Length: 227
Image (cartoon, rainbow, N blue to C red; front, side, top):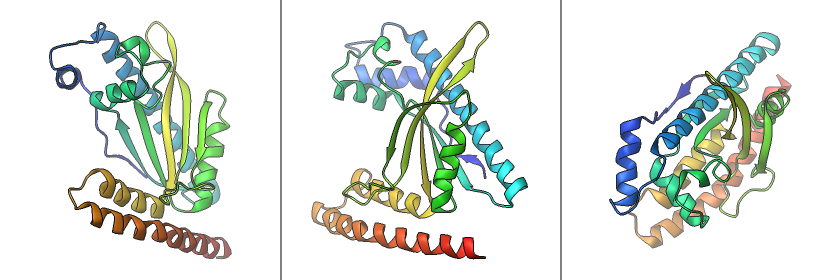
């Protein structure tokens, strides 16, 4: 189990993205506050990454099983951040961010089996310093497209030189099959120049495949438990 696909945010990158977002007409008043907050969110992601790695190692020692296949880390780019503020009809200022945007830092936890999704979530939420802010279970209640995943918005204290800041992170937990399906569906919807009729055709096919993948993973889990 490793942390991978990590897109670190740095000061120069934030400056460049802010310039692209505002086109010289507007600017964020407290640039240093934005950079500091990104670093805070990155630290919170690191805290959760350590917790998840420790959890996986503990299960390996005590239960001879690794619930986590791998973990992916991502930081929301500045363009997406301000796009979200616009959709929420919030002022594009730093003060709008801490109380309304909770997914600047994120982790995607890919598990080996369906049960592992809830094993990871339950054990993580049982920790004293972890607070649940929001939970959406798209496994028990899939989206109409067929999308399945467990989404948690959680917070953790981040210790700084002169303070402790409770900071939110979005964690998506899904199986290998769900991750494969989700990656292809995302590419089909947002990352392709394919004709609209082809997108519609494959979207309908993927909707059926989601149920097939879920059935296969359920059967494989049953085999795993039986042996």
